[in-house]
Image (cartoon, rainbow, N blue to C red; front, top):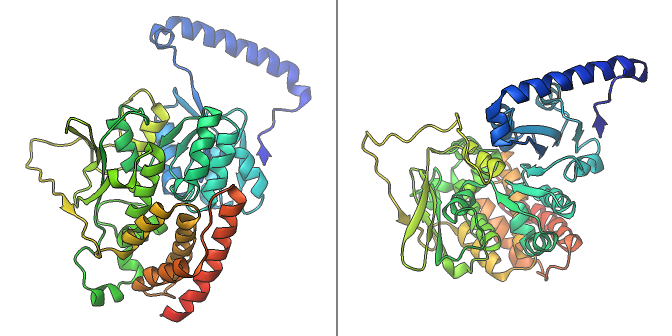
Length: 410
Ligand code: MG
């Protein structure tokens, strides 16, 4: 981990005088700025894991729009990329680390002492260990990494309860539900209704699906996201993951979660209550809103990245059922969710491997489901006892997915 060091000792005296002057000046400014005193705002200090990914970059934008409210104090990314080095320069975090160079240092960022809130925005199974580190350190966890709950929900939810740590959802559907529940994850409800765009291949025949290329699959009709999640949206595996996430996050039985196709991606999800009332959260699709909702919680602040809804023009919102068999990856994800234990972790590892191969043009689009199905039917599932068991299931499933992919090779 790199630390941005204080100036050398010989400058200490000058610095002391400078700091005293700054403190005095700040005091005078604060006394003059009554609004600041009245609002009593404190700056939330944020550690950001996965700073160069899609959610990471949007988190930086949200933070930069409210410098009086947020400060990024530590960042970690996978690689020392140009973007990462640019962020280090711009954000001047106290600490930064690239996981590829120093895995432990990146992990230390997730439990960074000075942070009030840890945003886990990296993708994939790797996110689970960062989320666990944050919760173990007693940090509020703003969670964009869905694999944390998919693979480790049975582990992290009780751990967070025990540590008294808040988990704030950043996934847009779960943020919508959270907002409909008035930010109370324990509020009673009858049913959660998760919306899905249906992806770019809704209505495609089996033959058409076989010819789908990575370029085509990476064009999502409504959302702009990272590659893995865009492909998972096309197969609807992503929606299956989100049902599992909702099960853990809101303690919902699988029978009390419905997913529906909503091609416009304006209603981000809904909650039905005991009396039959259904509340929905609407906005133009952008991740800036759920990111800011989590960072601002329990307040709301203006967000310049959200296009206001224009109700002076005609607006049609459609909702269509997901028929069984239409999206085999969605169906198999629900089976894994219901099975529990390491089944969702095996599913996820197989999907990460298969999607990676598809993106490299080494597996056809329909091979993604075929590989997942093979791995799940041939890998023993176990109960969850701790991180090591989940990690072992993940490693084994990746090996099996690579072997299974040989059969379906392009
Ligand atoms: Mg989502």
